[in-house]
Image (cartoon, rainbow, N blue to C red; front, side):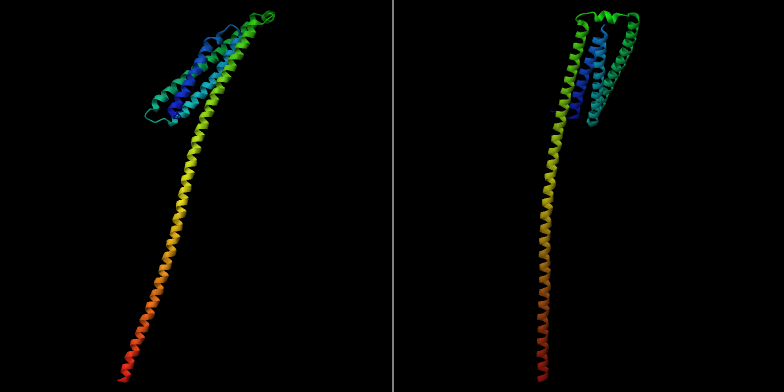
Length: 231
């Protein structure tokens, strides 16, 4: 799996576009339906998907930090475009909320007794179907978010494994360096001991040489004295 910043950026951007397409479908479809429950369910799903899209933009902003400067401007432009599109749908969602809230207030004021007529439906077909569709859609959204979380968890696990592997290699290198230093210290200690022995022998040889010279001088002095005394 390519874990480079550009590849991750492209992946998050693709997820963002898929979420925006899902939001676009809902705002153009279920969110403008005639049933109040259907509209509310669609708008709730739109809000959740807007949060997901916002998270994708945040991930894109994180990944762009590792992209080389030579190609970063084009990616910054893509982030600006994604932010603008996200803000547009946030505003659209807010406007739809306000519009349908006013419509619900006006409907409840101008159509008293409608709730009772709907409850007379022995099967509750429209409401039940709307709730079922809303439940299925929420379940699909939850499944998709779970899959996305699993994908991110796998990527994080792979990155963690790479980091641990790198740390293990560095630890082995440090251990090898420490062993080398220990061997060097041992060699230095041995060399120091050898030098001390050589110096000690050198002093011993000097003492012996001095003693020999002193004996020779004494012998010469004795010989000279003997010759002078005889003469």
